[in-house]
Image (cartoon, rainbow, N blue to C red; front, side, top):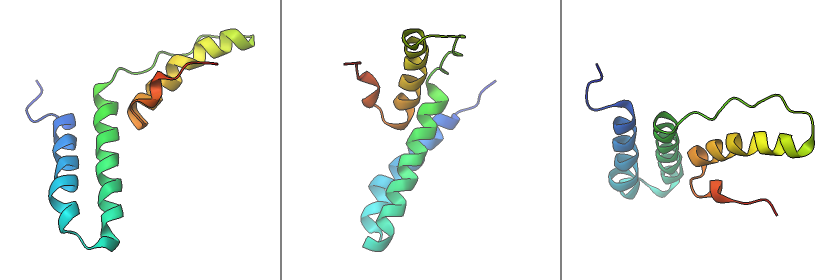
Amino acid sequence: MQYRPTAPELLTALADLLETTLLPALPPELRHEARVGAHLARMLERELTLEAPPDPPEVTDDEALWAALVPIVRADLAIAKPGYDAWERE
């Protein structure tokens, strides 16, 4: 049984607290650390709520390797930099 709030909900609340309450009240020399902390909390929240990337299949040529790596990299980007996971190969 999972009690509320969940870990992702707690991380979201932490990020919101850092960004909306503490950041404006902090002296300028500490604001960067608060932004980094909020960003880390949001990354962890996304990591806990998004599906894990599939295990890469065994591949031997470049096209197959590319096809195997794209879903893994997209999943990592969805956690670290949402929005950057929508790129296409040129």
